[in-house]
Image 1: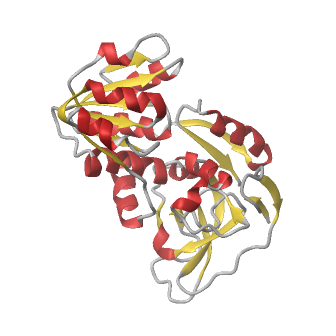
Image 2: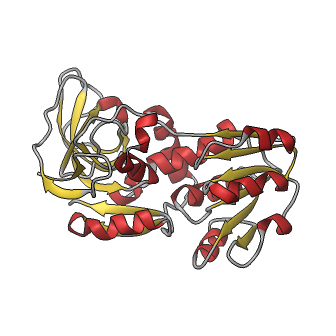
Length: 307
């Protein structure tokens, strides 16, 4: 079967022939139709993700994918061959950028009829990160103001919609065609960070969701109100700087949790929210998808089609 793999850290991911994985007790074999890339894939390739996951090489990329169950292992009763599912694999084991992928049966949720396989594959990591960073970590509430950096990316696009739906006032930073996208997704105010200094444009916000890191994060403490909250998915916050500004700061990493994913998928479909896809390319054009993913300029998710 075709698979996009690395054999050593800092390898360039390549399409190669790989054996179809065996199905063991409690697992399912999925015929993959679409797989979505995440910043996490670049961290796996670089080796940085070893700080958080026990990575087994060689490894197939893409923790997020959707397809049709081909075969079930012994002990699996919740799925059968032919079921359409969204799967969310652990980053330490091989993922879904392959014709077939094996995951625990518990790592799958049903793909609703309202979503294509490409849309389904685009939800797990980005959607869960956006939701729980905003509401579990930052504890965003209706009536509060949230500043979302990187609002036109995969996580950012979900975050803008979730915060708007929750009744928060949403301020978004973006650039280029990301400005219009952030507005369309529900941002009340959009700041072009290439043309305008966000620290002079806003102040007294309740929550900053930092999806960028670096200087953007360090300059964000000053726009928070006393007691405000900063949550980053990009880099650990500077605790001393947060304390000096009288704010709370934390980092959030999403790990696979199928129960939460099922609820989130149902909420996205039930509320008619958008799954923003930057581009969908064939696995034969993987190099194009990888270049776009690592450029940091994607508007929404990059999806690789395998069917």
